[in-house]
Amino acid sequence: MTQRLLLVDDDTRLVAMVKDYLGAAGYEVETAESLAAGRHQLAEHSYDAMVLDFTLRLCQLPYTQIAALPMVPLGAFLLMLNGGYLTMFTAAGGQTIGKMVAGTRVVASTPSGRAQRLPFGTALVRAGATIISIVLVGTGFLMALVRSDRRALHDAVADTRVINA
Image (cartoon, rainbow, N blue to C red; front, side, top):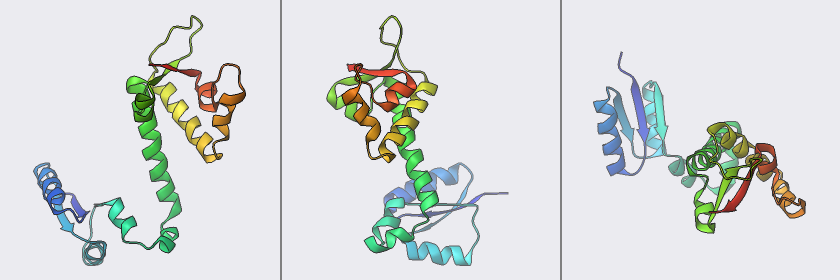
């Protein structure tokens, strides 16, 4: 049975490209150019999945109505997005884009003091601790100011350190 998808986005070129790609992969893709049109199609038809341009959704809501978004899925999405970004960039090369600009890199702490590339699991733990530091209004970052080794909470938890690249 063919999977039916609804793609909601106002960028018609992007929609055409994604529709062609997914169609070639065997999906039946229907499109809508606005949130209202997408809602109408959802009311009229059933779909196996829906791809919604998230910025389209947020941009069409007045600021006062953003709180009406379901907070748990929105929070989970933002956590996965930020956690994925931090984990993948740190595991791949030890640097997020900000660290590249600053000329620093994250490495595993070793007894010999030799810089080593981070394993994926360590990068994941570090990203989780970083998010906790952010949620705690940056308190985890303040540890770097008072610790003799200048490591923040996420570095202490993941046993990592930041060095000049």
